[in-house]
Image (cartoon, rainbow, N blue to C red; front, side, top):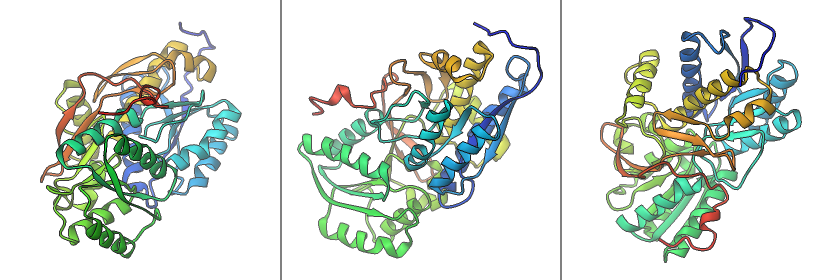
Length: 380
């Protein structure tokens, strides 16, 4: 129900917190673009209850601690209570105590490792049951059961690999190697990893490398002469943005699990994609992180229209259980855990730099961040 407030034309001010500089900008800049695309659409249609949304944007520069500092500044100095932001789990965990202490609301549009709940976060990226489960099944059925793990050295890759390791082990597979590299890893850092892969001969490389290092990993793979038809890199984090960065020839044949891919055929996606490309260029692809950043702003706007207030205690119950026709398909915010119910898809990169869809869930997959539905039996 609409809350009556004093009549005003002042804008609704919200925080936007993504890196558009530093080693994470390759993906976070697309999330910034997705956020601004949605805000522009809303404002072009008259705003919310006659008031425009005004983004207050800070650049954390890919530095984890800066996310927490900027979030605190937004809430204390700028008087902002709703923030759209963060890619890495480390940056989310930097912001989490700030929004909990000051009762703000963080909208987090990135896949993550699960096993977290905060009443002050709306999680709109995929959790392990929405990507890792089907990816593991697909890889075992089509390539084999010997996995090699490689990730960036922070919380998300280590936790995601722990989860994937359990899926692999439970289903008769084997992890033959596990390596972690600095987030700022250089080409020379991948040389010993590629040597170890040559020696162990896995069936699949499971990557949780993020940021600029993603391109470096795939280039090192190609330089070693490995064949993705035989031993692909499979990832939860490699999107169209990273494929564009590394080059289509480098990315071709590799695999990603995601709720959304650029070329999905639907009316909602065609409209979204056309608007995005009109603003940023016809050759600019969308991706799963950008799409989540986009649809979460529209879900926020829908709740704001109903509450007519940025008060977290009014917004949150309105958001929970809400639905939206997103580019990936109809999604919802799960009332029990504040995570999004999303679609599961597996794509393989073609020579045009886009993903051909190899698997698609029949409907959206309910969020299960603690893998409660898989605690006793995760056998395929």
